[in-house]
Image 1 (cartoon, helix red, strand yellow):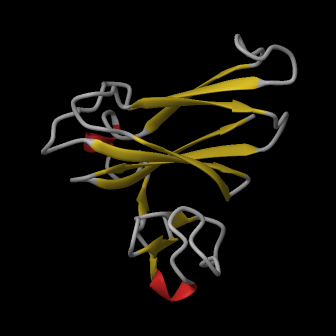
Image 2 (cartoon, rainbow, N blue to C red):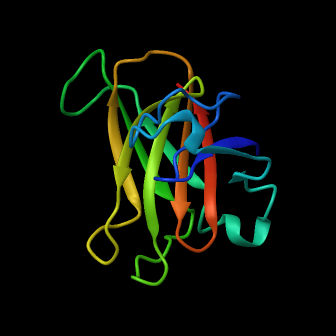
Length: 144
């Protein structure tokens, strides 16, 4: 899948263009490179997809904030991805309707390859891109 990749922090713009400024690290537009294969999908590499494709689970009623909030839980892979210093998930980037909204940074050995956010949105397409330090970026998508 095509994307514009920030050479500084690895952020991938999936809306069809490079931003004027990276929403994660603030790098200028000149720091982005277009890459036709920036993000992999389960269809691209079936053999690796079970440990890399983000699995998204939504709870329509938030346990913490109640009505008006949707809990979004993401785990990496249907089979848990390793969290070793030499092979781990570096971060999860969240997008709503192809626009970046948040990043969760993961520390190897200390955290499971998973994360959660509390959404105000009641509709739209949620995309989650994870970055494996060995196998690159992978995407999972669900409608809210």
